[in-house]
Image (tube, one colour):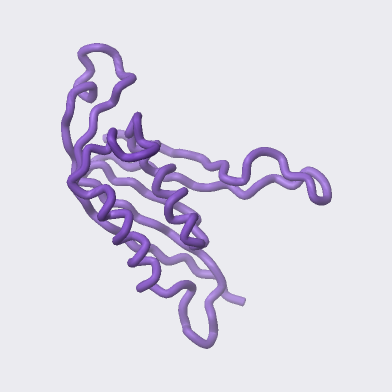
Length: 145
């Protein structure tokens, strides 16, 4: 069995402000960014179809997400009251995950220099049938430009 990772991306424009930064911080006022979201999925290569997932199905899910985020004020999107790039990555993961895709990484590119990678972690099995921690745990790595 061959396992492969594939990636699809979308780009959109959105505004936001960060409500929990110190007074006077530049991110505390409304401003906008060009965002690129890269969704990485992994799985076994289907020998008959020749793919891991159908790009068209993944694109459909991402188009729906883009439609909800493009030219929006991210603070007004349900679940994004504090729309940091890290929280946006988690939001995207949970929305794409709902579609049933085997997501291994979400990358959020905020402008040209800032990148956040959300890497979901599988549950840790502590004994037969026992799971430690929530199933949707993830690691967020941030690189600020």
